[in-house]
Image (cartoon, rainbow, N blue to C red; front, side):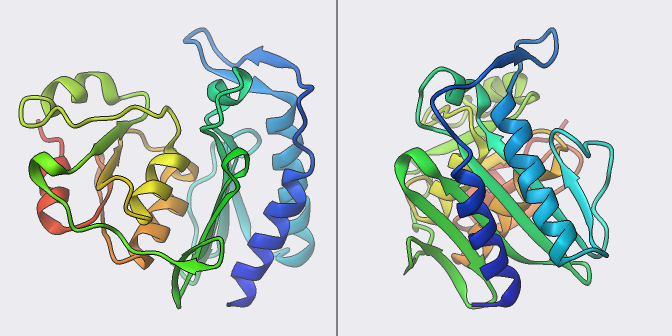
Length: 234
């Protein structure tokens, strides 16, 4: 296990101790998005740990650093991905973080705390609760896929012309983690918020999958055919 990955795992585990059943919910915008005090507290805890251990690294995060872009040396933080699920006591939510070093993602963690599923990856591979994981080999009618993100609704109509094996978890952390361990076969995150897809894409890649990014698509898939089927074009 690399130094960066151990740091992320230790920090996420400590941050998760801040999560309680008592929290305040606020509307983040007028489109139905929510935020809780737990989001802010978890993100601040992780940011403080990063600033202490990696003072020269930038931070790109959902609540406090949304306008920052990826740099050669940075961390991404999504303190509670799936906040609407979290606020409604649906267990499909998670903390997700990644470390980018010298222009490449080198470590990532997704912690689905309510499910007791800790996903992580470094140069040695991808793991779930200490056990190595791999993507599945399904495709076509046997493959389940997810399209996630604020831009997904028009995309769903497009994709369902070829397959109806779609599931909605409303949590990119779950989408990517479950692709990495083979529960589903592919995910396309249709939005440009890097904290939502950078950690998960890396974990899927280290689990034997493939990834793709352009302006419309942030994909992680089990194989090339599934990836091509997931692309959204004009």
